[in-house]
Image (cartoon, rainbow, N blue to C red; front, side, top):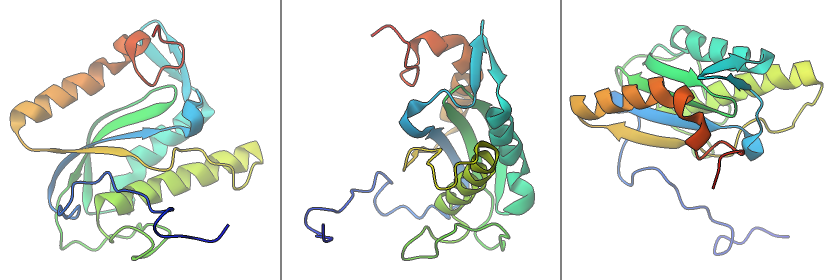
Length: 179
């Protein structure tokens, strides 16, 4: 099938006109491919991370050492997704970690998209090395983001992330939830 830009274009879910290199806080959610329970399991109100969940956690925590333009806030690795707050701290700091694809095929350098692409890439590579499954997707193609615009919103999102494990039974990412 040939590429037809009228049929095969994807609408961006990013905020139109917003430069995701702008300093500020962003709430992000990354979901495992086909919502697979890849990163761990729930034991009561706590997440027991699998080996792959530990990779996802460790790479998240290592990110500010690789990408100097970001700082991390609260985050949680759930059985099939990750929630976190990422701060873009400056638009003039050179990053050492990059998206695998440069613009126009990838996100702008030093942006939220560049961080997410690099993070997802390294986690995928490490997990697939262990599984012996090169090229198999680990993540859904996109990610959810929300620009945090106030202290009140920041506090509410921090509480949401911290309380997410205790609400797993109702979580829309939980494939076993009562619908």
